[in-house]
Every structure is written in C-alpha cells, then in structure tokens.
Length: 202
Image (cartoon, rainbow, N blue to C red):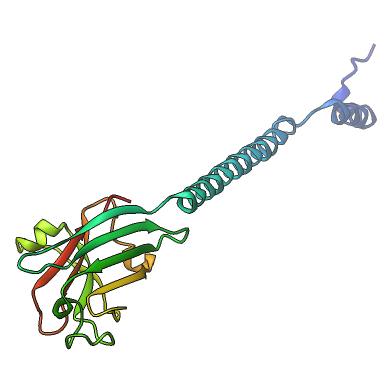
C-alpha cells in the first residue's frame, strides 16, 4: 500500500490550515484590553482625588471668610511720646477681604492736633502704619518700614476720631501677627513722633 503523506495533498492541507485558523487565538489579543481598563480606572481615581481636594480647599476658604466676618475688633491704647501729650484709644480688625480696618480716637493740646491752632480744617498729625513696635521706632531701630500714611482733618481743634481702611494689597507681603504700630508724627518737615499705639496680633 502506498504511504500517505498529508504534505503532498493540497486539499487536505487547506482543510488543516482552515481548522487551525479557527481555533488559534492571537497571543496578544487578551492582553490588549487590560491597559485600557487600567487607564480608565486610574483616570477615575485621579478625577475623584482632584474633586475632593477642590471641595476641601473651597471649604477652607469659606471657613476663613466666615471667621473673618465674625471676628470682633481688638482694642489697643495710643500713648503720647514725651514731651507730646496726645493720647487715646484704637480698635483694629481685618474685614472679609483681608483689609486692615483702624478706628482711632485721640485727644490732646490744640497745637498738637490741628495746625494752625484752632483750625479744624488742617491736621497737624500725619498718621502712619509702621512695621515694628512703638519702642522700636522710638529707639530708631533700623530695618523697619512705613507701610501706609494718611492725613485727615480733626473734628475739633483738640480731638479727632476717624476710621481708616488699608487695602489688603498693601499688606500682601506682611504678616499682621508680627509687631505693627499706628503712630502720628507732626505733619510736614519730618516732625517728631507725637503719639503711638502697638497693634494687637490679628
């Protein structure tokens, strides 16, 4: 009997190839789905983390804003710098925008409060927000800055009351928990320091 060799039979070879093609699975086909599924899951985790972090950040901002609104002004004393005699009280606070709000009431001799004497239209005091304490300025310590200055007309020759707001943009580089002071110098000519008050920590 003649020995059968399948390699010599084209018809049988085609049948074998057709059957093999139907049952053979490409080795990479099952693995290609996993990277896409992993990336999809990782993307969902990243979005969730970002959303939670954003919610926490918004909550913190709202909490700080509410705390600022609820904060009450803190009182401080304004004392004369001898030989001057002008003195009084003040209150300081930060509003919801982070601006520094100062309320000041002082009394003293007419020649210290107004200029010329008894002229309530012209103040003899120029007010300053100082970086550093009153003691540091009286002692002429170096390295302290003037953060703001302003002049307002007195209500009476020997007294003045005012409310003054210093924008948060002028305080952006400052930390109000450090020593700061509100002081009044004689207006014009770099006059002497008349009165000064150390601000409370805010």
